[in-house]
Image (cartoon, rainbow, N blue to C red; front, side, top):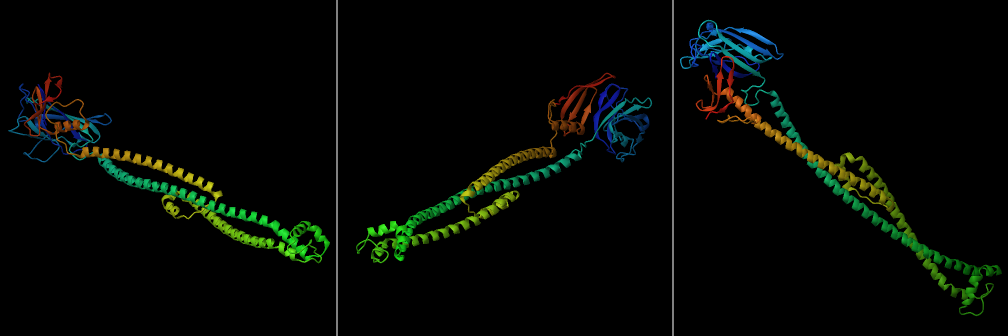
Length: 463
């Protein structure tokens, strides 16, 4: 510990100590007041000094205490409040002093110690100022700040959670992409299936329509056949009147006989000749009816399939709604679906698929936002980790030179630590702070004291 020196008073400058520390030893330089060279006073014993301390409490109360000095019993004496020991012969004017622990009380922010000559011993007054802080400058890991350790622990957890979020977000994004792709496949498949089924039904209906026209055409022939049969089977004149058209057609085609047909006794040859065409028509009608029956059965079968498929569509549509919260697993079910649709349901299915597609796109957008936010969180976490690493990294002491006025926070702490730790000395006009090698002057400042005001200029390079 160096000392600021002036005529008639010795000041140690401001020391920095952690609140609540105990068993601290200070080195004190005491000047000889009978000379003006700034030389140290030797041979001072405990009884030669009157010592007081003034402690500033956190509530701004000032507590004054008397300190009783005790002469050490040989070099290397264990710490004891008030111990006083001369460091001779190699360091004239230097003494060991053990202030009481009350000087570093937890509830205080500053402590001043005054040493004055208790008689006429040519001892210059000594002033010691101690600044008390919460940080522990001797703690190279976290400066004694427990919150730094807690913050580091929390940051590790945040980093781990962020990585987990990144993994989960990637999975969500991948699943959403699969959902989108599968939905498009389902939409294309459903529309294709509906179109195919509609075309098949339309084809069947065309056949039915054609067969129906054939039945209508052959129905007139069947009616004529009935008239011919009635003329053949009945021998009364009334039927000749009811079926005059058919009778005229018979007489117009007499066949191999001669004369008009008489249903009361005429030969039946002409009727047989004329019935040749109607009989063939009956066979054609029967054939058409068989086709119509077959086609009707096919339509019925198709309608049963359509009904079954419609019920399946209803069930699967309900699954689409109810399984929204389990999108990934339900997508596997959707891929296995076997759907068929009618033309009337096509618009409804397409509408539902459009909704599913829209929701899927919304999920993709939200997933993109989550991924973007996670990337920012990861970037910020890396910056925080970098800052924490900076706090934990061992730092070299500042090099020789002028301390800058606008240096960063860590550099300022480095200078404070160097000033507190390294060897320094002071004459009546010069303060010097040495390199770790204790021989190279890294920094210095001009000092003066007019017995009223002690002054120190700005620190400059020691070169």
